[in-house]
Image (cartoon, rainbow, N blue to C red; front, side, top):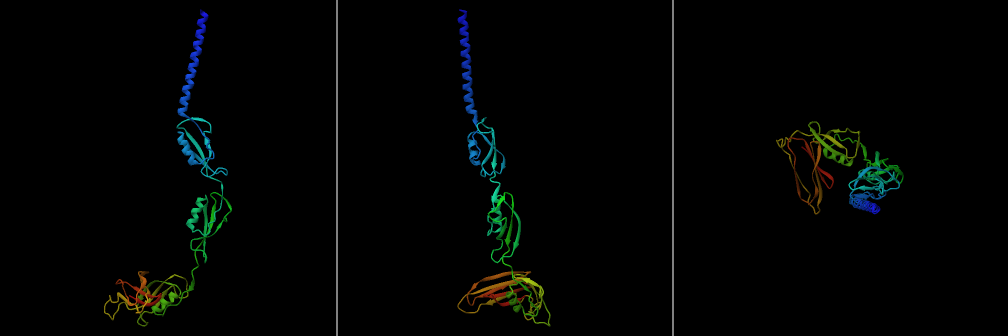
Length: 317
């Protein structure tokens, strides 16, 4: 009887132990399945894909750094932590090291790009702008890259500097400043047009011993070095007011009628005032058309009318 009781107790203990262990493992399996995940292999995968994958598994993505790698493309995973196959709970961080791509890059050909475009291409390739130099060129437009160092196709390390040679455009024609003193203003303007010089302003004084509207001074002086499009100032002999009209306001209205004919002609009217040139009119006009312009009172000014790019009228106020 005692022996049967002992056997019963042993069977009861074994049954209870097996049932308890079974319940424990079953509960652990379900809990583990709900709260834990196995870390996938991420090495070599695109960073955007990895972000979506880890988010779907309930894990957080943390970028711990970047590194150059010749084998792993740019923006792909180089390393991960925890390593693949580890079981971790949801909500944990997975740290990633992302590839910057190869440490070296082929130098792009920047010739023909304008400077801002060239700088963008350098940045896209992980390179930096070095020293820039500028030279005159008859073949390359102003601001275009003519040459570079290192040359296109060479291998460079990322963050290396690329030196650029940039065009300043064609060299401007240079002259010895012509002598305009003693010429009438009309003649002086024709000479300036021939040398492609710009009128910067006209100042008037009166010397009764000299012809009216004659140039009696100029800046720069005759013989000085000047370049195409350089601005020139003139001193012109003229009475302070039009005494024949008897008023200081006379002559402030400018009028010009185009010659009669059959074809439209190109008219350009320029006003030199306050040290600057202002284009008042620049268009084709029909024959016989009259053009008017008002010149501000109480200031020195000059009007120049060009007919088909030839100076036909100049008037100083």
